[in-house]
Image (cartoon, rainbow, N blue to C red; front, side, top):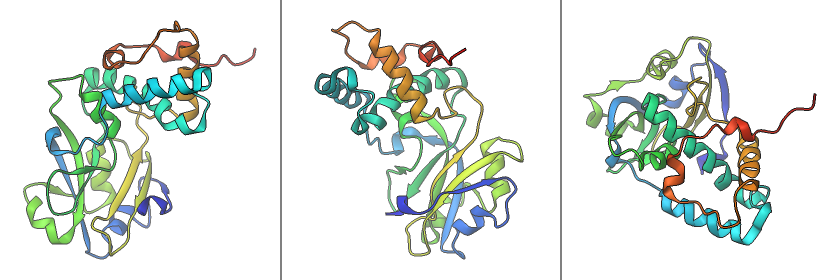
Length: 236
């Protein structure tokens, strides 16, 4: 239900402090794990499922696959996952995931689900950096981790400079966790998230150049591509 809450766009530092606000006067706690095991996180989607869905939708929608509104999330993430595979190979886990903990494992992924799909192609990719948001009732279980009490703590764990732009969505004092979602502006290729519009444009142009028998498979995501060559050329 919290996905309907407003997104707060701020630059560090900020007043009021969004991380302090996310604690809801002590109801919630936030921790940072520099080495969170991937196998403790729920994988909502698998690459093969993504391939099957994309191939089915392409059969149904043909050349309109990337322009049909129902396919926007699916089609855009085809590009993003491919970029993530390349970036994770080169840079590792740069941007911390945000995980929900409601009292038992596995964790739910608030952010980073596409990176988890990308990691299927990287057998040595076993750990990620992660924030864990939970209720104060469970805080004692994370006493071995760094507690994040301020926007400054959060910024440092993200490894970005002061002045960097962030986006946060909070819950409320009755929720099982305090921070529902976040995004940060980073410059690492494949980790900074391309816009839906750009992703849909390049996948449309890419597919237009493929033979009629083309189908997505898991190996397709592991091939490094220069997506800029499929971007729309500006006039002039």
